[in-house]
Image 1 (cartoon, protein in one colour):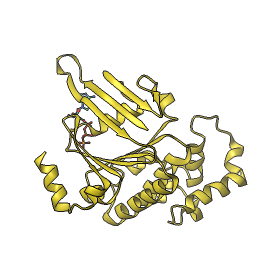
Image 2: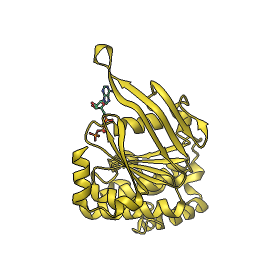
Image 3: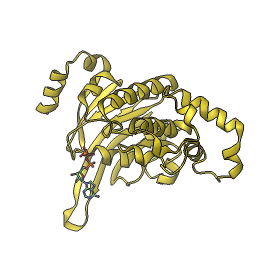
Image 4: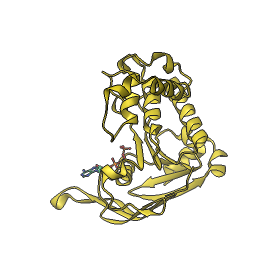
Length: 250
Ligand SMILES: Nc1ncnc2c1ncn2[C@@H]1O[C@H](COP(=O)(O)OP(=O)(O)OP(=O)(O)O)[C@@H](O)[C@H]1O
C-alpha cells in the first residue's frame, strides 16, 4: 500500500515560492489501479515527482508497504517505484535493439556484461515477455527501436518498466502522444498486464473516457489537493458527459 499523509511541496525560489501540493492525502492499496485527473497545473506531475523522490516534500509522510520512504533517496526509491512517461522516446533508447533495451532495463542498477546479451536463456525469456504484448515484437528482437511505431515503443516502455519487480508503477499520460488506435491498444494492454500481474499502479490522464473505463478509483486533483474520489462502481455508471460536467464544476 502507498499512503501519502498531509503532503506539502513548495517550489520556486526566493519570493516566487508557491505551494504546489497543499496538505494532500492519498492512498492506493496493493493491486489497485488508481487514476488521477486534474486541470493543467493542478500538481499531478509534482505528485509523481514526490512519490518517485525526484523532489523532496516540505512536510508530510510517504509510506510504501508500511515503510516510511519520505526521506529515502531517489536512487534507492528507483527499486521500489517504476515510471512510464508521456513520450515513448523517453522510455526506450532508439539506437539500441529491442533486445538491448530489455537487457538494459533488466540489468538497471547492476553491472552490465557482454555475455548477458548473447545468452540464449535471456533471449528466450525476453521473447516470452514480449509475446505477452501480443503485437509481434518477439519476432523483431534484433531490430532497432527507432524502427518501431509510437504505440509499439510505448508498449515496450511499459514492459521495460515492469521487468524489474517494483512496488508501484507510475504512468504519466502514457497515451497522450499516441494516435487514437494506438491509444486504445496501449490502454487495453496496460490494463491486461496490470490485472494479470496484480500490479499496484497510479495513472495520470487527461482522457475522461479512459477515466471511466479503467481503474479501481478515480481522483480529482485541484490546486494541489484531492477534492473528489469516485470508486469503480460509481464511475463506471457515469456517462462521459456526466463525468465531464463533474470535472468542470469543481
Ligand atoms: N520547479 C518549479 N518551480 C516553480 N514552479 C513549478 C516548478 N515545477 C512546477 N511548477 C508549477 O507547479 C504547478 C504544478 O505543476 P505540475 O507540472 O505538477 O502540474 P500538472 O498537473 O502535472 O500539469 P499538466 O497537466 O499541465 O502537466 C504549475 O503551476 C507549475 O508551473
